Image (cartoon, rainbow, N blue to C red; front, side, top):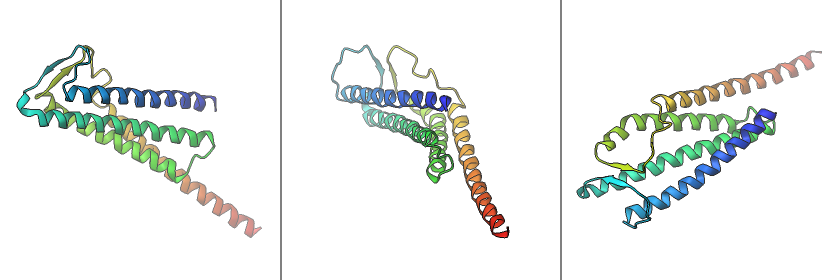
Amino acid sequence: MRTIRILDLIITILFYSMLGIGTIFFVIYTFFLFGIDLGIKTTTTFSSKNDDLLYLILFFNFIFYSTYTYSIFLFKQNITSFLNFNFFTDRVIINFKTMGIIYILGNIINSLIIPFFKQHIKIDFGFDNNLLNFPLNGLIIGLFFLVMSKVFQIAKNQKKENIELKQENELTI
């Protein structure tokens, strides 16, 4: 249980930091869209005739970040269930499946759509934006969560069968 408590602490810190950082960047992007200078050194390469594309890109970034934050929230819910010894509930199974779908869709979108946008816009904040963007990162994590969903579903069904078998054995005796 000590390991799960440590994982719960790490996931809680990660979730709230992602929530805070996401809010800060959303506000900064909003100011950036309306042309308000915040004194942050940025370089923007973009044609002013395609402003709609800029709004679309920033909207996709917001949705992308929000879904990943939501998946961390679902993982936090699962860890809380594990701390309460509720391992094989429908909620845990649905959360794992939802997290898997989020990561797989995020990987597909990142692999297919983002390179198209990178041809049209470049916003540089002076540090590497793709530090953790490994090619198969989202796909591997997404498949892992889908497998976990299936494993927990099988274990839940097995637990039900064992309870029914135990009841039958007690009736036989």
